[in-house]
Image (cartoon, rainbow, N blue to C red):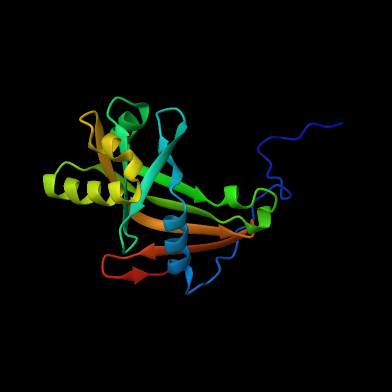
Length: 176
């Protein structure tokens, strides 16, 4: 048995770029998914490693932003204050535990910022509270705060490997 030089590329293991499928219905597929699934995993970046947190979310009507609440005394809050880049992963695996090919997954990338302006805070708090009435006390607690994420891009995966992407724009919708 011979040892390989670790710097040599292994073509068998190389990830081949996937073709991104054009889908004019993608914005509506995204809307359906974010409206049907109440929770997702928010991915943040620490100094040494990534970190994932389960969050309840609500999206704006135009899909350009979403909001979530978090306690102020958490690792998630601390990481968000240091690095605004986030990803939210939403999926349907709970609906299809025995049929992976039917699972849809959505990765939403964007920039998170704590909502501090009172009018904006009230608007986003109402949106989140309407979507998750059972979290009203948590959302309104003095120890909690809201973060708004301005969406950069959506990555939608279906049938385990079919990739689509979509980018909302400031004036309507823009597909990429």
